[in-house]
Image 1: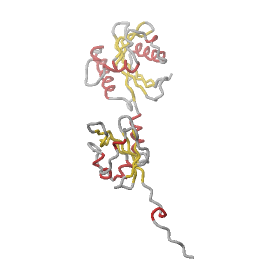
Image 2: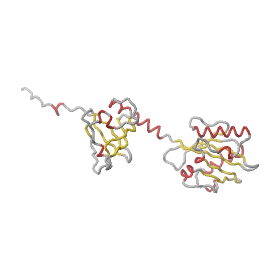
Image 3: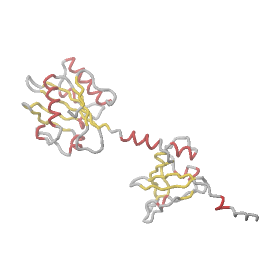
Image 4: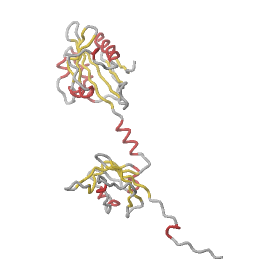
Length: 272
């Protein structure tokens, strides 16, 4: 089975979000007090639960979707309400069914973690399955799903500790659309060292960084003939390599190599 399944009285805490913790604690409280109903469990709260919920009713050996939240619809590409799990076309439907059946039979919640076999991005989903008895033979499964995306924290760490000095900015354009400056949105540790910059980047423009005060090259970024070479910065000991992206632009600060003596000083003729 490609699912990681946790069943019983606890759920894994290392990836659990506040919304999932809330729903789990609410189910335990309602179950213990005998007040567990579908309405009580899923009524509005401060967390965006409804968009991430799916309801499934037991239907013999199968399960039928009775509600699919908007966020789940976007993730799977359609609304499966009214259809059977066995006809969903999901390659993992058999594995889901075995877990759902155990939850429905034992009335014990379960938590799943899994990656989809069709994905190439390595994203992990986690799913909380809560049983709600409806009648003597019917059980509704309340399934809360959310995506665990580690990409941002990995990218942030790699950017922050990269050996190259880099600054990322969002363009500030004039009335005719020419980029004249940029809001700084990212600056890694190496760039801070080179620029001697220690304060927050909040509300910071490139033109407010002393080394960039006299630099006016940002307008070249989105023109038809973008310069591909290094741009000298007269007031600093580095050059700038511009990196253009669809919505932001990057500056890679290249330390300027000292010029060779032969480039600046006439050679003294040797004495015979």
